[in-house]
Length: 384
Image 1 (spheres, rainbow, N blue to C red):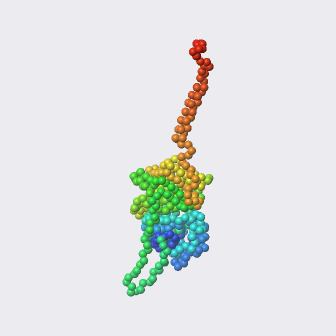
Image 2: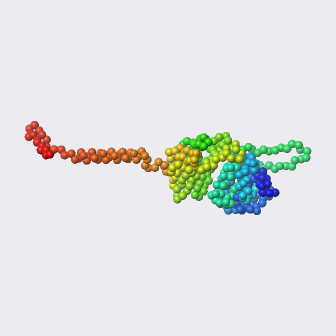
Image 3: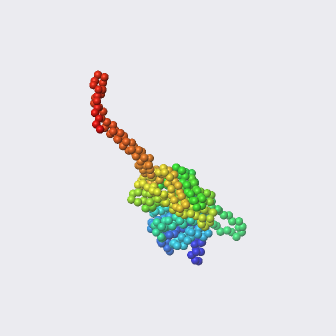
């Protein structure tokens, strides 16, 4: 059996549901420690092996699927290409004995929602981002399932020869993540963005304008030199859009010079109608010392060609370090503005004029005697 057939069978084995905790079966890939590992269908991976696997990886990315579509070549072509380039292990166990979040500081959890094509593009893009940050064969990927409530493992029994009817159990359908109707993107203790009105994304080449007034739960990808606050929006019934606000950390300061935009039309099965671009700030990028927030009442514009993201009256702060509210704000207006400079100029001009007038008045020398009815008439000698 060749590699492609094995992968196809492997994809067919992994099903998905929706939940708030890890659920098997699991697919591990990406690191060389998986080489030569074989797992029996009736056995679980050794707990010590899992702990070492998490600890030895430079980063761990856990993808939680939220859908019932099978993992096969038709639904997940991009993910299949990633698997073919790395070592991988499939485990049918129903749970993990050790939590990767406890053994790797760079571990993160990403919830995948939407159609299979949408999940395929998002999973592949996010994993490539992690590999670009930490290096090839150094990022452990884990594909798991989510369940809304505790479940029971069902085993198929052998059918008797005279049975003509077979009963089946259908897993619960997918559940969409809740949509929040505001412009507050908060990952408690990690990062916070507040905007007074919904962001607006314009794509002039296609005459599309999206008002991003509803979003799902935000996530935060924390790295040493660069972090990302990831917010997903459902802009139309068939369109999903993700904004990744990028924060760069350097010399005790943070700044937000770029925003990644990822848009996919779920009607396209192969994801060919997706948009993936990086927008850069027009003008000075928001920045502040670490531990401080940035506040700006002016309009911030991020642009790349005909794609423009507009943010109105924003306050933002990454690296909250456990805090649940903004720190002291650095304002984009600064201490001197145009009106202030105008006021100072007019005041200076008036002060100079007043000084000249006072000097002129002081130079006036009036006579020290005055005429009276009883006195002698005053005479003045004028010399030419």
